[in-house]
Length: 317
Picture 1 (tube, one colour):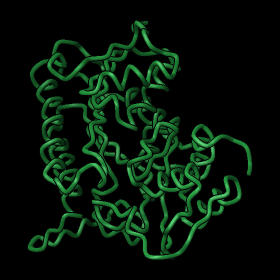
Picture 2 (cartoon, rainbow, N blue to C red):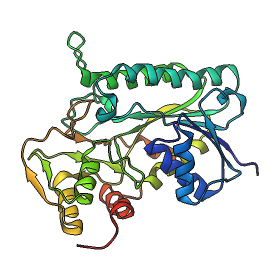
Picture 3 (tube, rainbow, N blue to C red):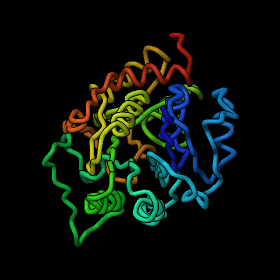
């Protein structure tokens, strides 16, 4: 049987690295990796011991994207976190549009039968997350008072709406709320990356007493839903990607305290604020991905425990 040909855009990103690792472990697909940082991707594959694979081609830039026939295209291109944006929120719109249109034009003009998997975000539900997302959750954007925290939600919602309007194409949006793996960029400024950095540098974590709930999807579960999407017939839909159970701040801090000796102080912390708004309860109860057979195996704490040991080691302090 012919191996499916899969294009991954944004191949140096955190999400892409987990998918690439799992695709190569599975050995069931031929990969075309597109990136503006080919050196980083080569180093990544080398660290995995998977450099030079004939079923994995690295492309420098995107000029050659339209030359090949793909069975599936996975868009992992991101614009970076608050630390990397440096106040340039226009990238939410320009970067999203650039690569989204690249794929859509490919589908319309060359291979309309290819599947397009676009990584979206839980922010489509809005920046004010005071409750878990549900099927009928509203995004309450104040049209006359749009704030920077609304920008990414608008960009993602616009992309999803555009995809739904292209009803004759196979497009699936995967809304990812939180994700953690051994391949995380520790400079990203997320809550979990701050914890890891504090442990590595023997520093106390400064946080506040506000509880947050996060839903960290495991790399294997994320790969599972991607494979489920690839196995579907013609479909144009969005799915919320969930773990089997979210985790709260207290549970996360207790684990790292007991396992790795993390010290933390309660105070006013601004270091892990998000450019997409303060999201205290950030997960979904909309389990529509079950309709394509997706059933997450790992909980958020399973993900944290299993992936953290690749960065911090597995020995208890």
